[in-house]
Amino acid sequence: MELTGKLAEAFSTQVTLELTAATVYRQLAVEMDVLSLPGIAGWFRAQAGEEIVHAEKFMTHMTDRSAHPKIGEQPAPTVNVKSVADAFAASLAHEQKVSEAIRELYRLAQTEGDIDSMPLLHWFIDEQVEEEATVSEILDRVKMIGNDGSGLLRLDAELGSRSSAS
Image 1: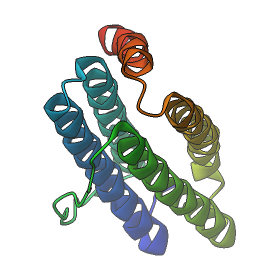
Image 2: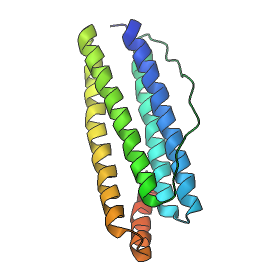
Image 3: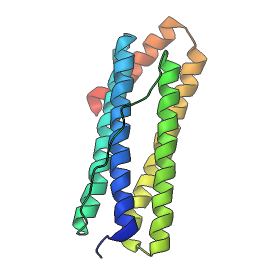
């Protein structure tokens, strides 16, 4: 089934949103590098890479269905980060925005009767539940740590182990 009309446009919009998310995560990585937290910066860089993979999944789905993905304008990231807690709060807010966009795609696919998009969208719904849960857990831990330097350094080391695995 060819992907056309409103749904094809919405998928292109989602591609742009995923690439924008990658840029936001790259900026958050820079902010953590500035705070001398290379492990957390690496975690954010790995997250940025994941967002690019997500954009690619949407583009592949589109081209497999004879649609032409269009990458839209991406605004410069506007993250105001002064702490690790700020960075993960910004991350959570962005994940929530992406989650709602995925739900909107799902609703549109239902309205359009596009059964072929459902497996992809189900995968993304599951992925977003996991993403929000992970970032929420990290944010909760950051709040518990507060300004404890040794706690932040432990978290930095723990999250830094992800960047080598991703």
